[in-house]
Amino acid sequence: MSEQRYCPRCGIAYEPLQEYCLECGERLPTNRGTVGLLAAAWQRRFAWYPGDWIWPALLFLVVAIVATAVSAATTSSPGTTIVATQPGVSVGAGGGAGQAISTQTLPAAPQPTVTTGPLPKAPGAPSTSVATNPSVPPAAGLFAWPATRTAYTDVLESVPFTSGRTVALVRARAAKAAGLPRAGVLVSADYPSLRPGYYVVFSGVYPTPAAAAAALAAAHVRGFPDAYVARVTHS
Image (tube, rainbow, N blue to C red; front, top):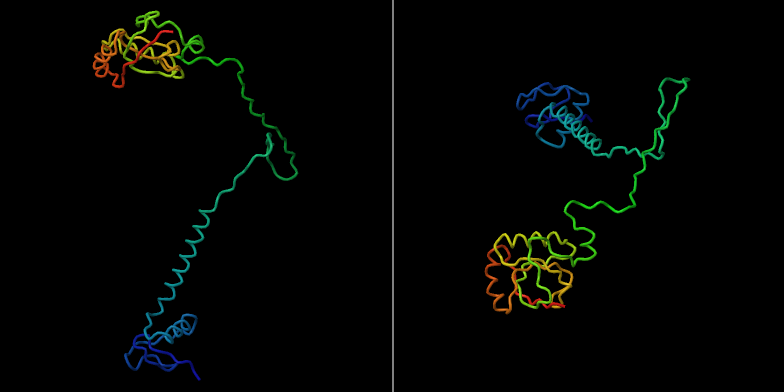
C-alpha cells in the first residue's frame, strides 16, 4: 500500500504521480528527498503545510541556537590561573629541538626593612612630656586657673587625653577669640571635683554657680552650645 500524500494548500489527498491538486490546482511537491519526506510527515499530522521553505528556516534556527549556547559557555568559563611555585624563573634563549637553552634565575624581591626604634611624630602631635604628664602649664596667652582657688566656671568642652592637648588648646584659643572671658585649659585629674582623663576647656572664674550660669548664654551663642557650669575644687 502506497503512502498517502496531501495537498499543502487544501489538504486533499493525491496520488504519488499526480502533479497538480484536483481540488485547488496547487502544484504538488515532487521532491522525494529529505525535504519531501519531512513534508509528507508534516502533512500526515497537520492539514496545513507552509511550504518547503520551512525546513531551511528551522535548520538555520537550530544552528543559531547551538552557536549561541557554545559562545555563552566559552565566555563564561573561568580563565586559567598560573601560580608561581618557585622564587626563581628559568628564562631561555628559545630555539628548536637540539639547541641548548641557557637559564638564568631572576633575583628574589628585597626583604622589607623593619624599624625597631621609636616612630617619628606627626606634625602637630603632642610631645612626650604631654603624653606622660598631662598636667603641664597652659600655653601662652590662655588663662591659668588660680592656685589653691575653689570656684565655679563654665566648662566649654571636655577633650579626652587620647585626642591630645593640642586639640584642647585650639578650642580654648577659639573661645578667647570669640570674646569669652578667662579662657584656658585644665587637667581634670588635678581637681577632685572633675572627672579624670580629660583636658577641660573652661571660661571664667566665678564665686557662685549663679554667676557662672549667667555667663552660659554668651558661651552658647559663641560656638559652645553644650557648655555647662561646674565646680572646680583645688586639691
